[in-house]
Amino acid sequence: MWEAEKRRIIERYDARLREHGDKFSALASGTEDRRAIRFQVLSEIGIASGDTVLDLGCGFGDFSGFLSERGIEAEYTGYDINPRLIDAARKKYPNRVFEVRDVLEDSFPQFDYIVSSSCFNLCMLDGDNYAFVERILKACYSHARKGVAVDFLTSYVDFPSAEGFHYEPERVFAIAKKLTKRVVLRHDYPLFEFNIYLYPDFAGWTSLR
Image (cartoon, rainbow, N blue to C red; front, side):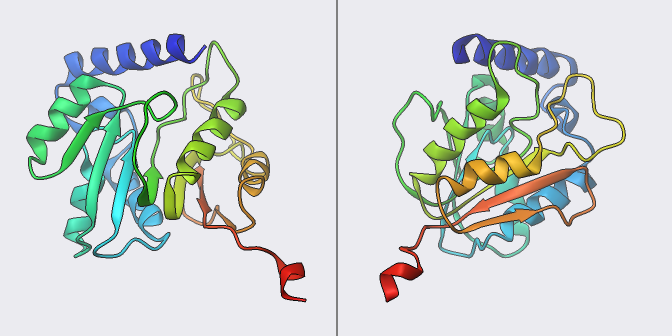
């Protein structure tokens, strides 16, 4: 299932790169102003200078530039399944680490924070979006020392997009709560999206009696 979807995603962005080149429009993720809002919300999970950060589905690696512009000198790594996007990211940010890697199939190290933006918005043709996201969140949470932040299109819209998948925030929250008690659902920023933060679990109140 995932292999077919992965090929479809890679081919989609290969086609967009041929059409747009290595420009922001190739990513089909709205305007740069909206991306700045997404990046701000991702960073507000708590990323600080000195932290190690994995950007999953990094595209051109622009989250690393966003952090640097705000004086956050994190140790950034970007993963993407599309080799052409990784090539473009390496040219744009030659001092950062970028790798072609699939976290559902390939081993990868621990990071302080793992973030992902606009990566799971396509409606899967061969599989279930919620089951897929559960696998992604589980993989990320098991490799994050301080937290995971991922954004999604929300079901609370007047006009859902034709090819996009609009997630019910409550269902994603429930998936996250199966992994950790410490979950934050951000649906307060001015986009038809939401962000979920997963922080390291704690033992629970019964352990303190």
